[in-house]
Length: 395
Image (cartoon, rainbow, N blue to C red; front, top):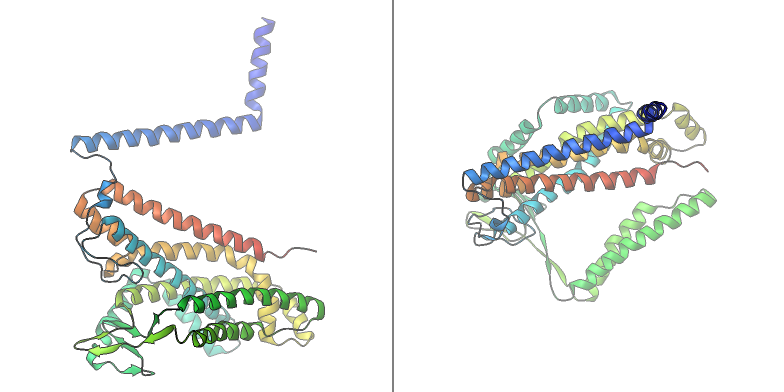
């Protein structure tokens, strides 16, 4: 009798132990989730077998049989495999995501600062643009920009040259493109050397400013290095990198760089839509910094521009970066709307045409889902690292 009461008391103590109870609940939850996943998987396999299908990735190595109009990075033809078509779609998705994040960041910070301007007109115009953009679905923005490009821009034969080398038409934007000749590696090496030099110069200028208080013109110095080093290397090797200018031949332009209307519409619409959210984040981050910081900087004779760049923004960045990361993720995921205007991203290629041709619904959509999951995790990790770097640390 005494032994049973001791055992009951020990079990009761284990049950009321918060740490043990927490671990037990997590184990049970994990077991239930694994069981559900296993049951769903088994059910999928049974249903596929009932209609004569099986799970297989062999379709990736079968010729795709369809063409892709926009393929700036990977050569592709209809005789290539579904895997290569998926890689073209992935590269197009990455192109929209990277260029969209860059433009959205620039526009977002600009609009956020404009919202705080003392100029009534500048402040109100930016507010109207932000409020209008945020309250209209992003898909309508994409359709609007695409419609403007297709219906308002001239046909290639009637396009007017911008600076003699740029042409904006309803078939895309045509611009000069670099051409690579023998010895271009030296020019690329000079460019990388300039980038490394900029990092070294930035570290030196920061230490110099901490010791002496003098500000080094870092931006202009780095810009001069990035331009001068490759230019001198190109002259030294005899023009290894040239420029190909688009020329009108027949009914369209040939040569140079072409940005298709589908890409331009998707890129620009996603960029300014995301920028309107980033602008409010930037405005909120700046307003969160106590006005005494600005007053102290002005009392020291620091100009308003330098106060914003050197005092306010560095303190606001830890508040700005986490919500901006969410908007970067949204921009990347919203790029899947590309299928609505015929832009060949990973959804349109692998999750669209390849799915319909092969009938591999589970396999293709699983690959698409895993692709977006990996992209989201990479962006989150990069932004977490950046946030850790900009957090102000006490001495």
